[in-house]
Image 1: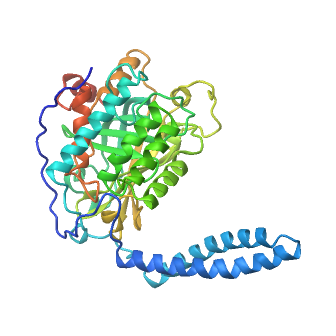
Image 2: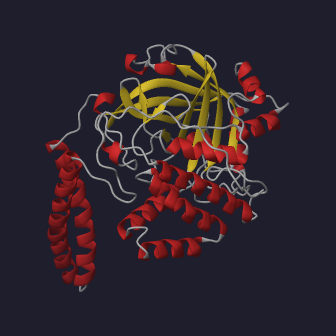
Length: 440
């Protein structure tokens, strides 16, 4: 179906902004003093390494009759070594704090304007329609993470000694408790490609906390985008990549760079990041580590992280030729016993990620608990998979988002996407029934 008009979306409550730096452009951000120190000393180290080891490489190359090759290899090696050493020295001179940064010290950026939010909502609708028109999907669906590798019921066991700093909001009374959850593993693109295709991977968790929903959406790498405007710009490139191939996508990047929509350095950074983050194989959905975006939890700001614990076979794919081998690997391992993942919270000790969402940020990790998935009954299994696929997941459900991808803009994109595809919200009878019984 073609979307003609979209219903209005109720504005979300704004996060309290305690310190508001200047608005960040779509392609640039303003580094803090620690980042400037690290950049300057890193460049100095690179220069020293380039001249020093590059000169040594020239001399060694000349000795065997290849001075140019020697200088190139030595220069490249020297630049890398010098940069790494420079960054280590900068960390010593300007270390990050060892204690979590209180939310009162966190600098959320100025929220997007209503016009920019409307543009991003229109952008996700355009992306969904483009994917539908390509014929690679049979009905309008998610713009990203369309292919579900496994979906079903699970439960989260919270540690009895959950850190007091995390006992806030929906997590206030969960120490030592177990909550019923829905979990969804997915490939990153908006079309159902072969599982072996280079791609980002994701997982979404919806918890039932005393009748209220709390969602955690995570990917296997920190986002490439510095902010939501930049993310949506490259969403159009992603659509071309999926529907018309890499040459069309590259052409779009070049045209947008020439016209000034993309900055050349940023375009190269993003493409290099995406190539790095989507290369390499995946054997099992639960054998990856996944990070959420930045969230406020009580007086802390940071990211939840899910990492493999037990039950996930990490050997080479046993169904590598099957386009859906990730699901088969998961089901096979569940037939032998539960699959579990550790949950932690990476509490930031500095606020670089508030200016640039592509930064991992200095942090300390607080243990939270574990996600446990057990084999699901074969009867009704297909219906359960379909139900989880139809659920609405939104990072604003239950948590306050932080940083450049904060609640005032990113949540609106998720809500618009869900509205477009007719997703089931928390009040839907099917969803309520799913959470009525605890997972075994």
